[in-house]
Length: 231
Image 1 (cartoon, one colour):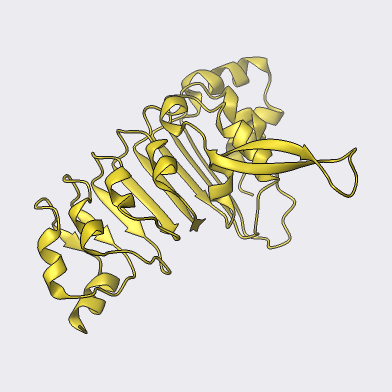
Image 2 (cartoon, rainbow, N blue to C red; image 1 turned 120 degrees about the vertical axis):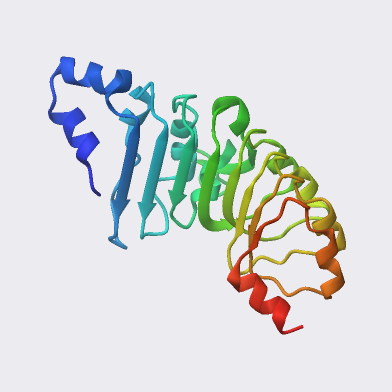
């Protein structure tokens, strides 16, 4: 990982850490390009009281156990505006977890993923959320996102009926990665009315469906446009 802020935190004295915690570090960008990474979520991130931008990218499948990261993310500063979690199982880190004993060994407990935790309540100032990992979000999961979110980028799959009606209504930018199965007439009709940019990979049933686009729309991504052109 590139660990500039973390290195300063570990090597600095108490005075430096107080400075970092109280506005000295407002943006953190962490990345690890090793597939066999042993990197862990940095717990010191919760100490940065004025953190506004956080990006964590990892080439491996996961960054620690999702339930550990889930708990830690809920201790981030409410000042956070941008969150990018670029590793395969990142969406699992937004879920709540309960635990049950293992059937094979009752002395062991197994984490069970539940619904998305109240992201809007914990991070009320979040404007941009980016998670390229495959999401299985339901309508109720989307209801847990901040109402003020303006940019959402994720690999959306297993979409239930009319789920677009549960997207944050102030959304301006929606990026749905390859593999997304979306866009019936009802999906278009219930997109956020403020939406200006839409990128996705999905074949349209007909060109007539385009009339349901929000009037605010100014850009449809090239991947989407190429599919439209072939109908």
